[in-house]
Image (cartoon, rainbow, N blue to C red; front, side, top):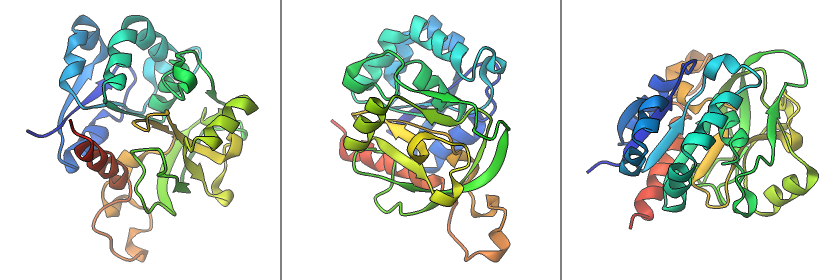
Length: 252
């Protein structure tokens, strides 16, 4: 049977179809579910190997980006979510989903704590930014980063993408190779501490990032595709493929 992926949506989510398609491209059976349905039957989470919280503007980003969704998750689904992760599940939060995971305390979860240890706040430019950026990955710990990820180009679209944390947290992220994705020096546009574009938890299976891999699944998605050497697929697929490979290698 194919591994199953759950794409969790709520009011304001707008990238669920692209995220589901990304999982389908790498061989998953995918289901998109509203959070209300999962709250009603939290045991359903055990039927999936992958969980995705996609991008968008959950609950209109009232209060702060991802805050309402994060509070909803951690107050109604704390035990099912932590059990899912602790029993070997894989999770990804993209853009707004990254904000949700961080504000719910599911990332970086240093020391196993579910308290919020970092944040994603206003870009240093003070503006919403929509552009393509170059990043490089560290696959030492993170299951979602391909082994050869010296450079990957992905689109970003956010106003609150500046990752920030106390120095002690940043130092531990560095030490434990939990900074899974960094902006290229010339593309570090939002002022994130240590150019952080994405992090993982100590297990390596929970990953959050501000760039949108699900928006670069076809080579033709790239704005310069007519001028670049032809590629079989968009670079965003590689992240989902890496996680699928890791899951198969570590299947019990």
